[in-house]
Length: 217
Image (cartoon, rainbow, N blue to C red; front, side, top):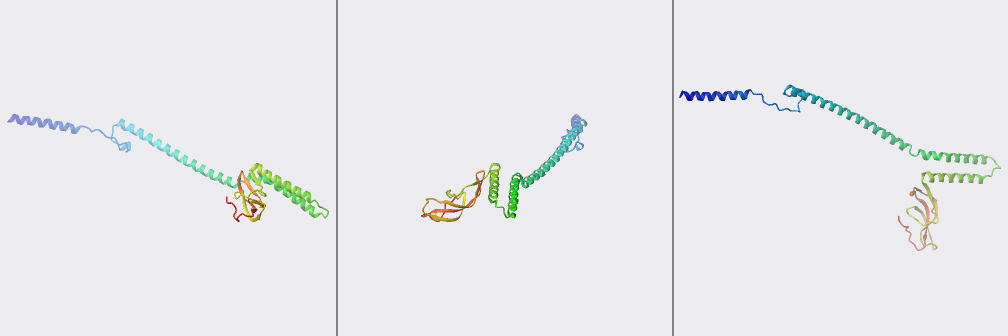
């Protein structure tokens, strides 16, 4: 009976020692990188390594934040510059055209002064010279606009009526024609690089047996 008690006591003592051994061991630490190194319970060498990585990440974050601020500032400056250039282009879009017109205006001024001088002299009858001068100015203007800017006047009188080019102001009938023709031109039509930018206003001559409706575009 005493032997059993001693055996039981031995077993119990061994178990107690074993339990005490497990309780005295230091459990492994699970690292949480979401916390700062100062909040992590880890060995000194591992903690030092984590602090270094944490400082490196902070430096990279600061650098990326600085780059973002610089890029945002550069983009804002670019946007302001583009808006300023767009405004300048809008305001000075016709500068070259107007510069080309200045010599023509000078010619008109000289022609007007010549006519005023002529009218002040009772013996002056130089109408032919004045007419020729104005005609030369008109030809020079038309030639410059066509060669440099693609603006060209198209002829209409005697041509078939074209609703894509002509705007009918009046209509007359004639038994001598078989299709609608332009009889007279009130204002000329103009093309800008083959595109109609102003219709010619015309009088249309219609066949005698035709209806009063003009062909549509």
